[in-house]
Picture 1 (cartoon, rainbow, N blue to C red):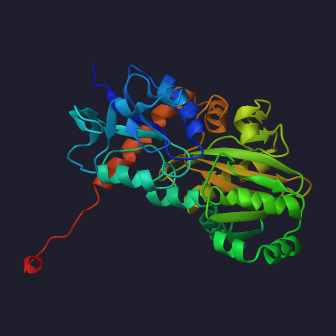
Picture 2 (cartoon, rainbow, N blue to C red):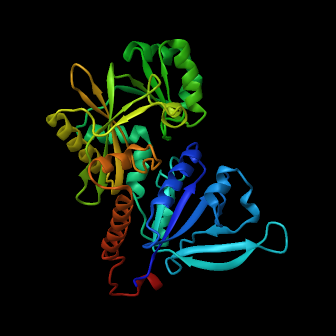
Length: 381
């Protein structure tokens, strides 16, 4: 009997999307084939404490204090390649070494900052452990909506008009800025924190009062805010992408939000939004969505997986790429797995494929030379 693959599933985190991560993680853990994988669950509190135990997901959902439980550390030492477990010592705040749990692959189910923005991916790289999803560069670029849109533009993809706003600029000239936005973009406008997902902090403004208030809200989540011209009468189309060097795209799907747009409540709380998979699109538009999803994926140097989100303008059929999400939701209602299900790839097999892609990429990177042959001792002098 072949040895099981040790998969560390990491979730929670210091992010406004902490709760979404917990729901996604439960779906992933439940669906992973227990005959193939030994699951090592690692929870991260909102304060950034890493810990493990019998059920870290439940602990975080119940907001129990995990400080007295087993702490977990991922050292950036490639010889360890595993999770170091610490237990509480004899004095307060003291932790002592317990054991090392070897890890074959990491499955991060972390949304937003400190999980999807390249920071933790850098730690995985230093630890030299294969991990599911995009690398440092793609994760970082996709998390920052301003950088992401600039790369989309460079690749020739159609994006909405926008104005980028820094917190200092806003504080020093609010009335002038509001006037410029009204004259250049008009209403309605979407206001978004640049570095956040799951529609956290995003609002739609219809007049100056709402615009000013929603900008203030967005600055509670980030120091950089994106104000975008709304696409009139838009359909929200999504497409899942899977692969490393040769990515493939799923059938597109459509979101019909229960609110005016697909905000946080419409996604996770109300439970009344509709998802259609596959979307009711003709063959040409279906192929166009898939083609542009892969083009956007490659423009950010993505690997592993991502979900591409589009806005399709009714009447004109203009297709705007809105964003790429490098760790898309994996909840029971999430579009990324649902679109692959509609394309004939079941949830558990999708997880298998993502783990295979992580290991394949790591194997390819291992072939790259890490240094040069030195013909002298100059560096010792």
